[in-house]
Every structure is written in structure tokens, then in C-alpha cells.
Image (cartoon, rainbow, N blue to C red):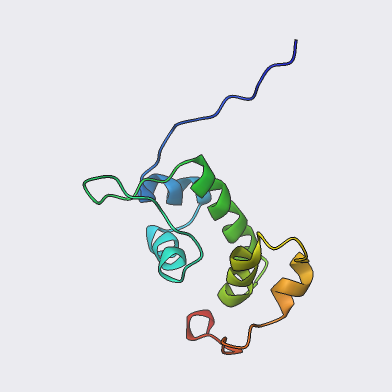
Length: 106
């Protein structure tokens, strides 16, 4: 009998996420501010990071560790649902509305 994967409903605070990623809370905040991730909020306004957000943040951290620019990471995140997207081309092709050098990446 095949077992269905279990889905974790665990949620994390920004501080917990930062510890899991070996990053600072300011780094996680910066990624959100720059549009790399959208974090759901609870009724009281607090951010709640779930497994989906944690996995996305792990990808972002990996790409940043490989010295990809924030705009280069943002590009595939915006286009991920387009079936003809090739990740290498997306990472290395700036959009018309982007500056080649981002102040954030300097």
C-alpha cells in the first residue's frame, strides 16, 4: 500500500525562519521587501511562514549564496508559471523595465 506524503501545517516566525536558513532576520525582511517572497499574515498582522515559504526561501538563499543578483532571482519567480520558461535564460536575461545594476545588489 502506497503512503500519501504528510503535509506539515507547522508555521514559523521570521526569527525561526532566519535561524533555519542560517541568515539574519534583516536578510529575510529584505527578500520580502524586494518582492522575492510574499508572506501571508495572520488576522493580527503578524507574518506566518509555512513550509511553502520556507522552501522558497531556501531556494532564494541558495541562489544568493551563488551570487545571483536579486533581480536575477526575481525574474524566474515572476515567470515560473510560464511553460516556455528556461531557468538559465530567465536568470541571465534582464527584463526591459529592470536596471542592469540594482542598488540593493551593490
